[in-house]
Length: 233
Image (cartoon, rainbow, N blue to C red; front, side, top):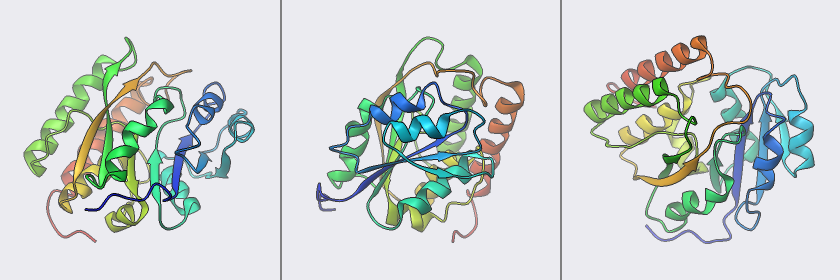
């Protein structure tokens, strides 16, 4: 595949829920010579997330229906057709300075989906149950899809037209792994790049609670199994 012109529009999509302590620095840390627009999807925050994001230069879109996938889908619709989409979290865990590393394989035409693999993480950034859960899910992905990955973090890049082919639908925790397994089923070129991963700012709504951890694990497993067989849209 030919390299993609550097003039192609790049939009960063950041789903956020009660992240006023981190969202401003995350938005401000993105290189605006690489990112043409930053869209923060406020997923029903009760704090000043929207105000902090807007002050840092983001376009804020509201999505009152709770769920990581719902927020991402709303961001995709807001970005419009065409261009490249970059997804990252707004809690300070993803390092915005790594955006060039995540973008480059798409721009160079050597990847259809780029995953930022959290191989360089701070102590305490990933809990023990997160690490073991990831290993089990990745082993299942390897068994069912023949895809060997080191991680499936949220920091990633994909062309908008490629994402549209996948028919993304999961409204909650299953969104990140849905994108991966559907890309595998479509025989897309998936490339991993190492990225830094830091301790999030504030309390996690997922890994920081028993309920969140159980629900996310459930949705990961169900999503991996769901798309392993049968026709895709």
